[in-house]
Image 1 (cartoon, rainbow, N blue to C red):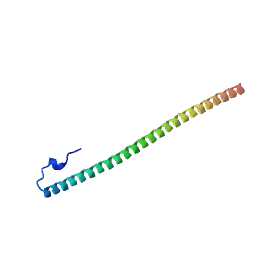
Image 2: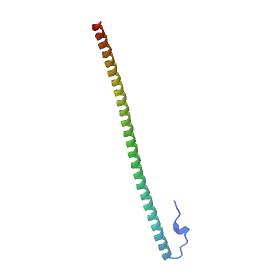
Image 3: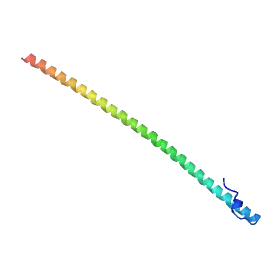
Length: 100
């Protein structure tokens, strides 16, 4: 803890002591307001950081769902094209068998 300011600063009269204490009070008030402003700014930055993290997680979730959907559509298209190819081969075999 700081020493008593009156011991550090040589005060010669009661008037000077009062003036000193008023200046000291003003400085303390300025420091308090500065600290409060810094804390509110830090709170805002903290909230913005959490909002960014939340949005980044949501974006990654959407990307994962899109990736999964692309894989599912690709596989279903592959299955359908295989079925169509088999059906075409069967149809051609039956058609060639009836001709021949």
